[in-house]
Amino acid sequence: MKQASAIAYSPDMPAPKIVAAGRGREAERIIAIAREAGITVMEDPSLAALLQAGKTGDYIPEWCWDTVAKILAFVIAKENA
Image (tube, rainbow, N blue to C red; front, top):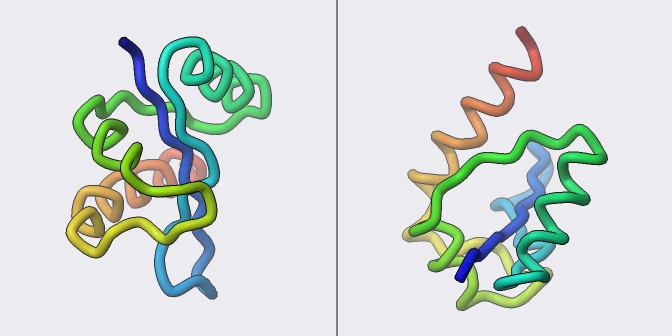
């Protein structure tokens, strides 16, 4: 079953936050909304699955920071290119 998690981050935040998470049709809806809004969508099934354990509004767990930092660096570089 497809899983999706959406995160938000700005430099004034202590860590990225989970803003959406879902499975199946809810995951497809999260991805569709992101694409419609022009938000970069990346596939990382293992990270999406790990973030399913959190709740919307939670900061991502500290043990995910390295992976999320790499993704954010990629997205920021892509948006600034």
